Image 1: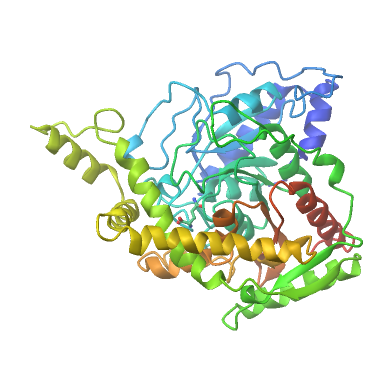
Image 2: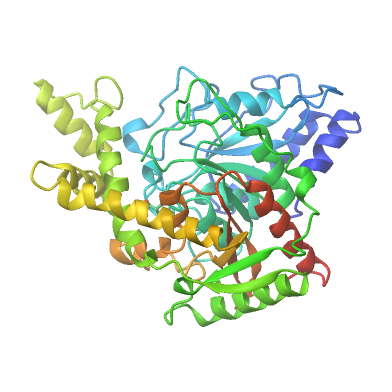
Length: 482
Ligand code: GLN
């Protein structure tokens, strides 16, 4: 299937009326249906063509505002972000068919910029997982690697971009859910600084870690989408008032004179040899592009996964209490008491991984264990944030690591082994714990399987990420692909 144009090409063509937003949407729908018929299963719902009218996509705006920046651009949206036209299910039975009475701020911003939501994408139930196999509605395939998982939890969004259905998509990243699927599918995934993008209308998993992130076929596609959805929102108390940088302007800044740190803890002996090889080559490309490379240490890295898997389930156990079969969630019809409504609805509505997280999280917060688990994990979180701060204080501008320890694994391989699934997040959870921005981009492949490299930057420095990622991408393009 032919991959489509970039975000910049589409919006330019729609604004200049070379093509219409309607035709762009129709093309994307045709591609989506064809991919779904081939078994991709990236989408849980698609807009109906001839359905809700596209709002004001052809805005001409000379004021430098947001209007028209994404004119006509079709965007796939993870199904844990609330939309009015399409259901929001979080890939959970408990929210099957659920219609949100309001839309997320990121969706409103997309519409204001002229973008069109093409459909809602598959995910691990409530964002809990690393393979999209925990979806109640069946797994998504990896378009780049048949028989392999697309990663997760935003696997549907990554797959939709990798299959060429859309040039960009929205996901959410609590512990790596944008970056790891981007790496597995061979696309770009960008998790912004905590507070950069409003979480209003993003269904909460672990509120102190959740952040909406963007996927793109290229660095530019992911950057333009982020620019539109970012910015302060009075409806999210954790959204920051920092001005949104002009990320497009940074794409060609290069890495000349930048100091890129390579943290040794992210290159363990157990790293997949193919990932190590692609990583080494990418590092040399940064050097050739003018960056100074320095080995650094983030000594508390090995505590990140255990801390994350105490904190994220603790927050989840609290956030998911609302699915009680009364206020939210499918209700079991045969219940005879309030307790039976809770018990029956939650037992039937939640899948096994969600149940595991709720039990783990409730335990970690319970009287007598709170200090030992939740309290201690909070302390580790501070140490991890301090590790990063010390590295920035040494004059390091960016860090470069592999995104995941292996390429995409076969479907079913880790499905019955939660700990080995959790370990695929070793390199990504640290950015969420520290609240810093991070980006994954393709750095070649091993036996046909895409490999991702991750850049990390100090808080609010998404522009540095885009500049460095743009330079690396250009280095691969210069030789006709990586
Ligand atoms: N894989 C991680 C988890 O299962 C991260 C998920 C996410 O970022 N939403 O919790």
